[in-house]
Every structure is written in structure tokens, then in C-alpha cells.
Image: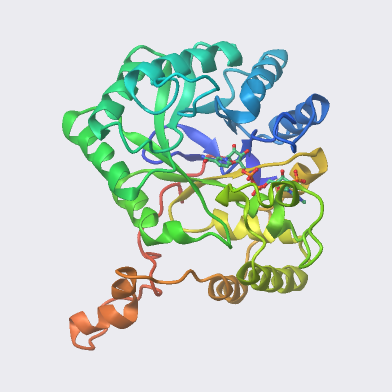
Length: 367
Ligand SMILES: NC(=O)c1ccc[n+]([C@@H]2O[C@H](COP(=O)([O-])OP(=O)(O)OC[C@H]3O[C@@H](n4cnc5c(N)ncnc54)[C@H](OP(=O)(O)O)[C@@H]3O)[C@@H](O)[C@H]2O)c1
């Protein structure tokens, strides 16, 4: 299995599996997910396949994800071999003004909670979970660096933040000789490609690997949901929940699913594997975080990198899922850029991308 090849995360020396294991499904507190027995099987399957990169958050399933993960890692005495990532930011339930967000007071407390639940004295990667619109970039990077200096955290990441904020944090880190941000965790899949407007180039220019979440759009791209018949599974449960991350049952997306189904048929591969393969090979992607509520789902997902997507089928998927190009991004397409050069051919960039730039992670595989 190709999962036991490891790639560097951003510009760090940390080697991680191209497919990481998401554990937001560990626990049933949110009305979906896996019970403890299934979660343990998923965990064992991932480690047995050679996977080393595991993603959790203090807020997942109200702390259950971290607690079970801590138990599972201890049972296999795998702490050294595992690259353990967690996140802070969400308020875990009380009316405390500093009980959430990204200010120093909360961050330090949140990390203590994660370490306790996970039964470890350090995290390999610590992510800021969501931008709080309040805390300055300056406070964030200094707080995160203190955690690195204290030995509680090895590497740093940002998740769900505006591109300008990530760029400011990284630039401050660079100029002050602080620990840089190694990973940007963002939603990316055939049905959610908006990060391409800003974050692909940001990641490449400033040395952050993209760690992709919801690569199957919460299961939509496995093909198990059918138009007019989406009655069970996470997307059905979360329909109307008001959480936009789970609202994928749209006309536009059904058309993308149809194109994916066609490509998967031609390749004689399950749709989930083709969708994961597509996103894993997008520019700047360091790792794709796969989720599973059952071991057989993970088993299939782990085979997603065992084949190559032929160029013409990749292009078919690119075109079927192309995101809209709102202002100012339409100025950066080849059509508009051509006007800068009076019609002369200047480069061979495909529309909107930077495929000719060396992509983080590629070529640095360790067998
Ligand atoms: N930073 C953030 O804001 C953020 C947000 C979300 C997630 N994440 C991270 O990213 C990880 C992955 O996200 P995700 O769980 O949304 O990923 P996903 O791969 O898009 O969705 C996983 C879900 O898809 C279904 N599925 C997976 N493999 C399948 C298969 N082979 N056949 C059929 N159905 C399949 C299952 O749904 P059912 O359970 O319904 O069967 C599974 O729970 C999370 O665990 C978490 O670590 C981060």
C-alpha cells in the first residue's frame, strides 16, 4: 500500500503519510460516527497499513475523540511512531468569555486539556482550529512559539483562517526567527475548490503544506448518496443543521458526482478512491485527511493512491468541478493575463494554476 510512504509537512522535517487519519468520527456524541470498537478497528487498520499521521481536536465529540485516541495509542505503545495533531479554539461548553477563541489564556489551557486527554506530554502538530476575528496574528504566533519552546508542541498549523491572516502570521514568524507554520488545514474536494483562489499559491510561496479535510465531502463523493434519496449517513443526519460544512446535497454537486461516477467506471475503481486520488495530487497538498465510521470504509480509502489518474480523466474531473472565478480572481486567468503581455505567450500555466511550480512534498518521498 502506498500509505507507507512519507512526505515532509510544509518545509518542516516532519515526515507524514500522504493519507492521514481523521478522528472526528471517533464517538457518536454528534449523532453520527463510530462506537469505540469500530474506532479501535479503524485506528489499528490505519497503523497496520503503515499510516503515521493522525488528526483530532479538543472539541471533537466533546473530548471523546482525544480520550479514545490516547487509549488506543497507549495500548499499542505507538506514541513515538505516531505524528499526533490536535487543535484548539472551540469553547467546550461553559459561559466563560475566555473559554474559547485564540487568545493566550485559552490556548494554554486548551493545550493542557488535550495533553491530559491524549495521555501524552507533547503534540507533534498543534492547529489553531478557526479564526476568532479578535486575536492578533502577533499574539497567536508568540503564544504558539512559547508552546514550542516549552516542549509541549513540535510543529504549528492553522486551520480555517483567512489567507491574509495566515500570510501575516507566517511573515511575522519568518522575520522574527520564530517557529514557522508548517501546515494549513482546509476543506478541499471535488465539490469544494474555493481554496484554490488564495491558499494554493500561499502554501507554495510561504512553505506550508495543505492538509485537506472532508476530501469526500462528508461521504458525498463515495457515491452512496443519490439525488432524491439521501436518507441515511452523516449528510442526511446533518441536513438542515445550519452547519454549512455539511450542506453538500446541491444540484451543482450532483453533476460533479455524475462526472466522478463516469470516471470511476472507466478506471474500474470505487468513486471514493478516485476522489481521494484527485485531491491528493493537487498542487501544494501535503496530506489528505480521510474519515471513516467503519473499518471497511477506511480499507477502501487507503487504496486511493495505488493507481494513477490518466491525464484526460483528471482533466475531465477538473472541468466538471471547476470553481467559479469571482472578482478579482478572473483577472488571474490566462485570458486576462494574456492582456498583460500583448498576446505573447509567456508561460504554459494551465488556467488558474501553478503546476509548473515545485509542489511541497513531491519528490521528497521516503520509502
Ligand atoms: N479543521 C476543520 O475544520 C475540520 C473540519 C472537518 C474535518 N476535519 C478533519 O478531517 C477529517 C476528515 O473529514 P471528514 O470525516 O469530513 O472526511 P470525509 O472523507 O469527507 O468524510 C468521511 C465520511 O464519509 C463517509 N465515507 C468515508 N469513506 C467512505 C467509503 N469508502 N465508502 C462510503 N462512505 C465513506 C463516512 O460517512 P458515514 O459515517 O456517514 O458513513 C465517513 O464518516 C476529520 O476526521 C477531521 O480530523 C477538520
